[in-house]
Image 1 (cartoon, rainbow, N blue to C red):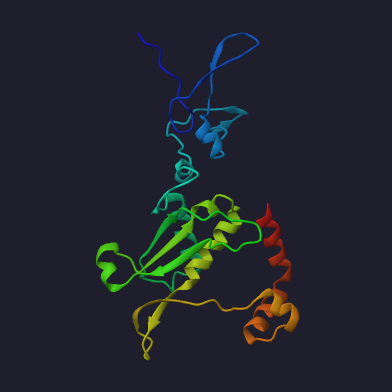
Image 2: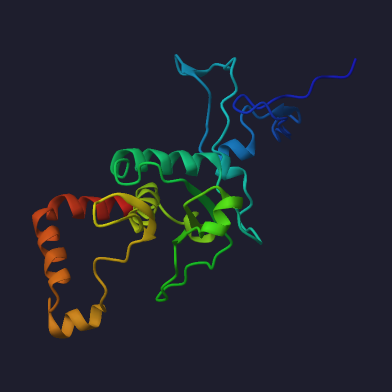
Length: 224
């Protein structure tokens, strides 16, 4: 009878056998390399030992995607679930009824000193709605996403969802959807030379001053 190959305690996939130099014997890994990459070190730890779970714990779906993709693909379930949670927390009333889809795009990769789009929302036209079954499609730069912290990823999705806005008639009734522009449009060097010359800049400054401690804590968290 053929010997059963060892399985990963997290996802159930086969794991490699490694030889111990001191004894010359082969020993199997408890957690496969893919799960280790996803941050999984063990399953159901009890009393300091790893106990095998009856229900395999799958790593985040996005960790199963190659580091580089050549064309847009649907966003994996863990990214969609994160977006749904942020939408429910901060955008549920405003985006009630909106159908939003998420896709990953190949890049470009972030380059120091050069601005790169991390994501982009698009309003789906009436013609494309018959095929896409969506009101908005939010694309996420996959090359950049892999370099972001959890705090930055949440902020990116929150930002793109804020671009999605209901379009209402004069009576306040929903007649469609539209893309909202940024509240502040300016250059850092202009602010350095001319100060807070726009009302939008002044409003942003007041927000920063009012929440200064909290905002800087978020900056430090995002940098980790």
